[in-house]
Length: 411
Ligand SMILES: [Zn+2]
Image (cartoon, rainbow, N blue to C red; front, side):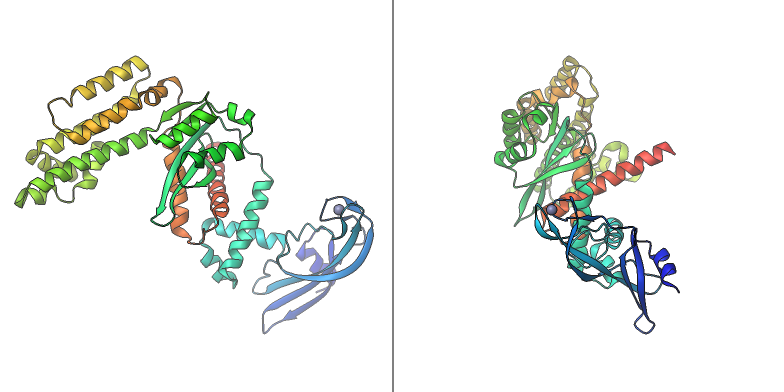
Protein backbone atom coordinates (compact mmCIF):
# COMPACT_ATOMS: atom_id res chain seq x y z
CA UNK A 1 0.00 0.00 0.00
CA UNK A 2 1.30 3.43 -0.85
CA UNK A 3 1.85 6.18 1.72
CA UNK A 4 -1.01 8.20 0.29
CA UNK A 5 -3.36 5.23 0.72
CA UNK A 6 -2.20 4.75 4.32
CA UNK A 7 -2.82 8.48 4.83
CA UNK A 8 -6.36 8.19 3.53
CA UNK A 9 -7.28 5.26 5.75
CA UNK A 10 -5.59 6.68 8.84
CA UNK A 11 -7.52 9.90 8.36
CA UNK A 12 -5.72 12.19 10.78
CA UNK A 13 -6.60 15.68 9.56
CA UNK A 14 -3.50 17.65 8.51
CA UNK A 15 -1.12 14.68 8.76
CA UNK A 16 0.32 12.31 6.19
CA UNK A 17 1.92 8.90 6.50
CA UNK A 18 5.52 8.72 5.25
CA UNK A 19 6.52 5.30 6.52
CA UNK A 20 4.75 2.11 7.56
CA UNK A 21 5.69 -1.18 9.13
CA UNK A 22 3.62 -4.33 9.49
CA UNK A 23 4.55 -7.19 11.78
CA UNK A 24 2.48 -10.18 10.74
CA UNK A 25 3.58 -12.37 13.64
CA UNK A 26 3.01 -9.86 16.41
CA UNK A 27 0.00 -8.42 14.54
CA UNK A 28 1.15 -4.88 14.90
CA UNK A 29 1.00 -1.93 12.55
CA UNK A 30 3.16 1.15 12.94
CA UNK A 31 2.69 4.30 10.95
CA UNK A 32 4.97 7.34 10.90
CA UNK A 33 3.23 10.63 10.27
CA UNK A 34 4.19 14.28 9.86
CA UNK A 35 2.38 17.45 8.92
CA UNK A 36 1.04 17.79 5.39
CA UNK A 37 2.72 20.50 3.37
CA UNK A 38 -0.15 23.00 3.76
CA UNK A 39 -0.47 22.41 7.50
CA UNK A 40 1.98 24.92 8.96
CA UNK A 41 -0.02 26.55 11.72
CA UNK A 42 1.69 25.95 15.06
CA UNK A 43 -0.12 26.57 18.33
CA UNK A 44 1.38 26.80 21.81
CA UNK A 45 -0.05 24.17 24.19
CA UNK A 46 0.25 26.57 27.10
CA UNK A 47 -1.81 29.53 25.92
CA UNK A 48 -3.38 28.32 22.68
CA UNK A 49 -1.91 31.22 20.68
CA UNK A 50 -0.25 30.92 17.33
CA UNK A 51 3.55 30.64 17.39
CA UNK A 52 6.18 30.69 14.64
CA UNK A 53 9.54 29.67 16.05
CA UNK A 54 10.43 25.98 16.14
CA UNK A 55 13.10 25.05 18.67
CA UNK A 56 13.28 21.34 18.17
CA UNK A 57 11.64 18.45 16.31
CA UNK A 58 10.99 15.13 18.04
CA UNK A 59 8.83 12.02 17.83
CA UNK A 60 6.13 10.53 20.02
CA UNK A 61 4.44 7.18 19.65
CA UNK A 62 0.78 6.78 20.55
CA UNK A 63 -1.69 3.96 20.33
CA UNK A 64 -4.50 4.47 17.84
CA UNK A 65 -7.65 2.54 16.95
CA UNK A 66 -6.92 -1.04 15.81
CA UNK A 67 -6.95 -1.88 12.10
CA UNK A 68 -8.78 -5.14 11.76
CA UNK A 69 -6.67 -7.65 13.75
CA UNK A 70 -3.71 -5.32 13.96
CA UNK A 71 -2.86 -3.23 16.95
CA UNK A 72 -1.95 0.16 15.50
CA UNK A 73 0.44 2.76 16.79
CA UNK A 74 1.29 6.08 15.22
CA UNK A 75 4.69 7.73 15.48
CA UNK A 76 4.09 11.42 15.12
CA UNK A 77 6.60 14.13 14.33
CA UNK A 78 6.22 17.01 16.77
CA UNK A 79 7.77 20.37 17.46
CA UNK A 80 8.87 22.19 20.51
CA UNK A 81 8.14 25.87 20.00
CA UNK A 82 9.18 29.15 21.52
CA UNK A 83 6.11 31.07 22.69
CA UNK A 84 6.53 34.81 23.45
CA UNK A 85 4.30 34.37 26.51
CA UNK A 86 5.05 30.89 27.82
CA UNK A 87 8.64 30.24 26.74
CA UNK A 88 9.55 26.86 25.30
CA UNK A 89 6.49 24.64 25.02
CA UNK A 90 5.09 21.69 23.12
CA UNK A 91 2.94 22.43 20.11
CA UNK A 92 -0.73 21.66 20.52
CA UNK A 93 -1.98 18.79 18.36
CA UNK A 94 -5.63 17.89 18.04
CA UNK A 95 -5.05 14.14 18.03
CA UNK A 96 -2.93 14.22 21.21
CA UNK A 97 -5.18 15.25 24.07
CA UNK A 98 -2.82 14.42 26.94
CA UNK A 99 0.68 13.30 27.80
CA UNK A 100 -0.48 9.69 27.85
CA UNK A 101 0.51 7.52 24.86
CA UNK A 102 -2.92 7.38 23.22
CA UNK A 103 -4.57 9.24 20.38
CA UNK A 104 -7.67 11.27 20.98
CA UNK A 105 -9.96 8.95 19.10
CA UNK A 106 -8.52 5.94 20.92
CA UNK A 107 -9.33 7.61 24.24
CA UNK A 108 -12.79 8.49 23.00
CA UNK A 109 -13.48 4.92 21.94
CA UNK A 110 -12.45 3.73 25.40
CA UNK A 111 -14.54 6.40 27.10
CA UNK A 112 -17.56 5.34 25.09
CA UNK A 113 -16.92 1.66 25.83
CA UNK A 114 -16.77 2.48 29.54
CA UNK A 115 -20.26 3.94 29.35
CA UNK A 116 -21.77 0.54 28.86
CA UNK A 117 -19.22 -1.90 30.20
CA UNK A 118 -17.21 -2.19 33.42
CA UNK A 119 -13.63 -0.86 33.32
CA UNK A 120 -12.19 -4.31 33.91
CA UNK A 121 -13.87 -5.78 30.88
CA UNK A 122 -12.80 -2.90 28.62
CA UNK A 123 -9.26 -3.26 29.94
CA UNK A 124 -9.15 -6.99 29.27
CA UNK A 125 -10.45 -6.56 25.74
CA UNK A 126 -7.78 -4.03 24.84
CA UNK A 127 -4.93 -5.57 26.79
CA UNK A 128 -4.53 -2.54 29.03
CA UNK A 129 -4.29 -2.22 32.81
CA UNK A 130 -7.55 -1.35 34.55
CA UNK A 131 -5.93 1.72 36.10
CA UNK A 132 -4.94 2.92 32.62
CA UNK A 133 -8.47 2.53 31.31
CA UNK A 134 -9.80 4.35 34.35
CA UNK A 135 -7.40 7.25 33.75
CA UNK A 136 -8.41 7.42 30.07
CA UNK A 137 -12.09 7.36 31.00
CA UNK A 138 -11.57 10.16 33.52
CA UNK A 139 -9.79 12.36 30.94
CA UNK A 140 -12.56 11.63 28.42
CA UNK A 141 -15.21 12.71 30.92
CA UNK A 142 -13.25 15.82 31.96
CA UNK A 143 -12.97 16.93 28.33
CA UNK A 144 -16.68 16.35 27.89
CA UNK A 145 -17.51 18.34 31.04
CA UNK A 146 -15.23 21.21 30.04
CA UNK A 147 -16.92 21.53 26.68
CA UNK A 148 -20.55 21.66 27.82
CA UNK A 149 -22.86 24.34 29.07
CA UNK A 150 -24.45 23.49 32.36
CA UNK A 151 -28.21 24.07 32.66
CA UNK A 152 -29.34 26.64 35.23
CA UNK A 153 -30.32 25.44 38.68
CA UNK A 154 -33.90 26.38 39.63
CA UNK A 155 -34.98 23.33 41.61
CA UNK A 156 -32.43 21.35 43.52
CA UNK A 157 -32.48 18.02 45.28
CA UNK A 158 -30.41 17.12 48.32
CA UNK A 159 -30.05 13.59 49.50
CA UNK A 160 -27.53 11.30 51.10
CA UNK A 161 -26.11 7.93 50.22
CA UNK A 162 -24.91 5.55 52.85
CA UNK A 163 -21.56 4.24 51.68
CA UNK A 164 -20.91 1.84 54.52
CA UNK A 165 -19.57 1.80 58.02
CA UNK A 166 -16.20 3.27 57.22
CA UNK A 167 -16.91 6.03 54.73
CA UNK A 168 -20.38 6.71 56.11
CA UNK A 169 -22.36 9.26 54.17
CA UNK A 170 -22.14 11.09 50.91
CA UNK A 171 -24.28 14.17 50.37
CA UNK A 172 -25.61 14.42 46.83
CA UNK A 173 -26.88 17.67 45.33
CA UNK A 174 -28.81 17.32 42.09
CA UNK A 175 -30.66 19.39 39.50
CA UNK A 176 -34.28 18.25 39.51
CA UNK A 177 -34.92 19.55 35.99
CA UNK A 178 -32.22 17.43 34.39
CA UNK A 179 -31.97 14.58 36.88
CA UNK A 180 -28.26 15.17 37.03
CA UNK A 181 -26.04 15.08 40.13
CA UNK A 182 -24.15 18.36 40.53
CA UNK A 183 -21.95 17.87 43.52
CA UNK A 184 -20.80 15.35 46.13
CA UNK A 185 -19.80 16.15 49.68
CA UNK A 186 -18.38 13.91 52.37
CA UNK A 187 -20.70 13.35 55.35
CA UNK A 188 -24.11 14.94 55.79
CA UNK A 189 -23.62 17.84 58.15
CA UNK A 190 -24.78 21.41 57.75
CA UNK A 191 -21.17 22.30 56.89
CA UNK A 192 -21.24 19.74 54.09
CA UNK A 193 -24.07 21.46 52.25
CA UNK A 194 -22.65 24.88 53.18
CA UNK A 195 -19.62 23.86 51.16
CA UNK A 196 -21.72 23.39 48.05
CA UNK A 197 -23.33 26.83 48.30
CA UNK A 198 -20.06 28.55 49.11
CA UNK A 199 -17.83 26.92 46.51
CA UNK A 200 -20.10 26.03 43.63
CA UNK A 201 -22.55 28.90 43.24
CA UNK A 202 -22.37 32.66 42.92
CA UNK A 203 -24.84 34.72 44.91
CA UNK A 204 -26.74 35.30 41.67
CA UNK A 205 -26.97 31.56 41.02
CA UNK A 206 -28.14 30.99 44.58
CA UNK A 207 -30.89 33.57 44.22
CA UNK A 208 -32.22 31.72 41.16
CA UNK A 209 -33.01 28.58 43.18
CA UNK A 210 -36.74 28.40 43.79
CA UNK A 211 -37.21 25.07 45.48
CA UNK A 212 -35.28 22.31 47.17
CA UNK A 213 -36.52 18.78 47.53
CA UNK A 214 -35.01 17.20 50.64
CA UNK A 215 -35.39 14.59 53.30
CA UNK A 216 -36.51 15.71 56.75
CA UNK A 217 -32.94 16.10 57.89
CA UNK A 218 -32.36 19.09 60.11
CA UNK A 219 -28.77 20.02 59.09
CA UNK A 220 -29.79 20.32 55.43
CA UNK A 221 -32.74 22.54 56.33
CA UNK A 222 -30.48 24.82 58.37
CA UNK A 223 -28.00 25.15 55.54
CA UNK A 224 -30.74 25.88 52.99
CA UNK A 225 -32.27 28.56 55.19
CA UNK A 226 -28.93 30.25 55.62
CA UNK A 227 -27.75 30.19 52.00
CA UNK A 228 -30.96 30.28 49.95
CA UNK A 229 -33.53 32.00 52.15
CA UNK A 230 -35.86 32.61 49.20
CA UNK A 231 -36.02 28.94 48.28
CA UNK A 232 -38.99 26.81 49.31
CA UNK A 233 -38.15 23.57 51.05
CA UNK A 234 -40.33 20.68 49.91
CA UNK A 235 -40.04 17.42 51.79
CA UNK A 236 -39.76 14.53 49.44
CA UNK A 237 -42.79 12.26 49.38
CA UNK A 238 -40.59 9.28 48.77
CA UNK A 239 -38.67 9.85 51.99
CA UNK A 240 -41.80 10.46 54.02
CA UNK A 241 -43.26 7.20 52.74
CA UNK A 242 -40.00 5.49 53.68
CA UNK A 243 -40.47 6.73 57.23
CA UNK A 244 -44.05 5.42 57.12
CA UNK A 245 -42.81 2.04 55.92
CA UNK A 246 -40.28 1.93 58.75
CA UNK A 247 -43.06 2.70 61.24
CA UNK A 248 -45.18 -0.19 59.93
CA UNK A 249 -42.19 -2.45 60.24
CA UNK A 250 -41.66 -1.36 63.81
CA UNK A 251 -45.27 -2.29 64.61
CA UNK A 252 -44.75 -5.67 62.95
CA UNK A 253 -41.60 -6.38 64.94
CA UNK A 254 -43.27 -5.43 68.23
CA UNK A 255 -46.15 -7.82 67.45
CA UNK A 256 -43.80 -10.53 66.26
CA UNK A 257 -41.93 -10.25 69.52
CA UNK A 258 -45.06 -10.72 71.64
CA UNK A 259 -46.51 -13.65 69.72
CA UNK A 260 -45.29 -17.21 69.68
CA UNK A 261 -45.93 -20.43 67.78
CA UNK A 262 -48.04 -20.41 64.62
CA UNK A 263 -48.78 -16.69 64.71
CA UNK A 264 -45.08 -16.02 64.76
CA UNK A 265 -44.69 -17.96 61.52
CA UNK A 266 -47.33 -15.86 59.77
CA UNK A 267 -45.77 -12.54 60.81
CA UNK A 268 -42.23 -13.68 60.10
CA UNK A 269 -40.62 -12.55 56.84
CA UNK A 270 -43.48 -10.26 55.87
CA UNK A 271 -41.40 -7.14 56.09
CA UNK A 272 -41.18 -6.40 52.38
CA UNK A 273 -44.81 -7.36 51.83
CA UNK A 274 -45.79 -4.70 54.32
CA UNK A 275 -43.54 -2.20 52.61
CA UNK A 276 -45.16 -2.85 49.21
CA UNK A 277 -48.13 -0.90 47.99
CA UNK A 278 -51.35 -2.92 47.89
CA UNK A 279 -51.92 -2.18 44.20
CA UNK A 280 -48.56 -3.70 43.32
CA UNK A 281 -49.28 -7.06 44.92
CA UNK A 282 -50.65 -10.10 43.11
CA UNK A 283 -53.53 -12.19 44.43
CA UNK A 284 -51.30 -14.63 46.26
CA UNK A 285 -49.39 -11.89 48.04
CA UNK A 286 -52.63 -10.13 48.94
CA UNK A 287 -53.90 -13.38 50.44
CA UNK A 288 -50.72 -13.72 52.50
CA UNK A 289 -51.15 -10.21 53.83
CA UNK A 290 -54.83 -10.82 54.60
CA UNK A 291 -53.91 -13.92 56.62
CA UNK A 292 -51.48 -11.78 58.57
CA UNK A 293 -54.09 -9.07 59.10
CA UNK A 294 -56.66 -11.62 60.33
CA UNK A 295 -54.23 -12.61 63.06
CA UNK A 296 -53.14 -9.16 63.93
CA UNK A 297 -55.33 -6.11 63.72
CA UNK A 298 -52.61 -3.69 64.74
CA UNK A 299 -50.32 -4.58 61.86
CA UNK A 300 -53.28 -4.25 59.52
CA UNK A 301 -54.19 -0.86 60.92
CA UNK A 302 -50.61 0.36 60.56
CA UNK A 303 -50.46 -0.91 57.00
CA UNK A 304 -53.71 0.79 56.05
CA UNK A 305 -52.50 4.04 57.60
CA UNK A 306 -49.35 3.89 55.55
CA UNK A 307 -51.35 3.16 52.41
CA UNK A 308 -53.72 6.07 52.99
CA UNK A 309 -50.93 8.55 53.77
CA UNK A 310 -49.90 8.33 50.15
CA UNK A 311 -53.05 10.22 49.14
CA UNK A 312 -51.81 13.32 50.96
CA UNK A 313 -49.96 14.44 47.85
CA UNK A 314 -52.96 14.18 45.59
CA UNK A 315 -54.30 17.44 47.03
CA UNK A 316 -53.60 20.66 45.22
CA UNK A 317 -54.80 23.09 47.87
CA UNK A 318 -53.16 23.65 51.21
CA UNK A 319 -56.49 23.65 53.04
CA UNK A 320 -57.51 20.32 51.58
CA UNK A 321 -54.09 18.79 52.21
CA UNK A 322 -54.13 19.99 55.78
CA UNK A 323 -57.66 18.63 56.35
CA UNK A 324 -56.65 15.27 54.98
CA UNK A 325 -53.60 15.14 57.24
CA UNK A 326 -55.74 16.07 60.24
CA UNK A 327 -58.22 13.26 59.50
CA UNK A 328 -55.31 10.87 59.02
CA UNK A 329 -53.92 11.80 62.44
CA UNK A 330 -57.41 11.48 63.98
CA UNK A 331 -57.46 7.83 62.98
CA UNK A 332 -54.52 7.19 65.27
CA UNK A 333 -56.56 7.94 68.36
CA UNK A 334 -57.11 4.92 70.68
CA UNK A 335 -54.98 2.74 68.41
CA UNK A 336 -51.92 2.69 70.65
CA UNK A 337 -49.61 2.49 67.64
CA UNK A 338 -46.57 4.25 69.05
CA UNK A 339 -44.44 4.22 65.87
CA UNK A 340 -47.31 5.75 63.87
CA UNK A 341 -47.80 8.43 66.51
CA UNK A 342 -44.12 9.26 66.27
CA UNK A 343 -44.52 9.58 62.52
CA UNK A 344 -47.50 11.92 62.98
CA UNK A 345 -45.41 14.17 65.22
CA UNK A 346 -42.67 14.21 62.64
CA UNK A 347 -45.15 15.24 59.94
CA UNK A 348 -46.53 18.04 62.09
CA UNK A 349 -43.01 19.28 62.87
CA UNK A 350 -42.32 19.49 59.14
CA UNK A 351 -45.72 20.76 58.08
CA UNK A 352 -44.48 23.79 56.15
CA UNK A 353 -42.28 21.69 53.93
CA UNK A 354 -45.12 19.24 53.28
CA UNK A 355 -47.64 21.95 52.43
CA UNK A 356 -45.06 23.66 50.22
CA UNK A 357 -45.82 21.01 47.65
CA UNK A 358 -49.09 22.86 47.01
CA UNK A 359 -47.22 26.13 46.50
CA UNK A 360 -44.52 24.91 44.16
CA UNK A 361 -44.53 21.69 42.20
CA UNK A 362 -41.36 19.67 42.30
CA UNK A 363 -40.90 16.33 40.58
CA UNK A 364 -40.75 13.64 43.26
CA UNK A 365 -38.67 10.62 42.57
CA UNK A 366 -35.85 12.43 40.75
CA UNK A 367 -33.67 12.53 43.83
CA UNK A 368 -34.26 8.83 44.28
CA UNK A 369 -33.47 8.07 40.63
CA UNK A 370 -30.21 10.02 40.86
CA UNK A 371 -29.33 8.06 43.98
CA UNK A 372 -30.20 4.80 42.30
CA UNK A 373 -27.88 5.55 39.38
CA UNK A 374 -25.00 6.40 41.69
CA UNK A 375 -25.53 3.24 43.69
CA UNK A 376 -25.59 1.19 40.49
CA UNK A 377 -22.27 2.75 39.44
CA UNK A 378 -20.78 2.02 42.85
CA UNK A 379 -21.90 -1.59 42.64
CA UNK A 380 -20.52 -2.06 39.15
CA UNK A 381 -17.04 -0.62 39.57
CA UNK A 382 -15.14 -0.63 42.77
CA UNK A 383 -12.64 1.97 41.62
CA UNK A 384 -14.40 5.09 42.80
CA UNK A 385 -12.04 6.25 45.46
CA UNK A 386 -11.95 9.40 43.36
CA UNK A 387 -15.26 11.15 44.00
CA UNK A 388 -14.77 13.48 41.06
CA UNK A 389 -14.62 10.48 38.73
CA UNK A 390 -17.82 9.08 40.22
CA UNK A 391 -19.55 12.44 39.83
CA UNK A 392 -18.53 12.86 36.19
CA UNK A 393 -19.58 9.30 35.47
CA UNK A 394 -23.01 9.84 37.04
CA UNK A 395 -23.44 13.14 35.18
CA UNK A 396 -22.58 11.57 31.88
CA UNK A 397 -25.00 8.74 32.60
CA UNK A 398 -27.80 11.21 33.39
CA UNK A 399 -27.16 13.30 30.29
CA UNK A 400 -26.88 10.40 27.85
CA UNK A 401 -30.07 8.96 29.28
CA UNK A 402 -31.89 12.24 28.73
CA UNK A 403 -30.48 12.50 25.25
CA UNK A 404 -31.70 9.01 24.57
CA UNK A 405 -35.16 9.90 25.85
CA UNK A 406 -35.27 13.06 23.74
CA UNK A 407 -34.30 11.01 20.70
CA UNK A 408 -37.02 8.49 21.47
CA UNK A 409 -39.59 11.24 21.79
CA UNK A 410 -38.51 12.81 18.52
CA UNK A 411 -38.71 9.51 16.66
ZN1 LIG B 1 2.03 30.18 24.91
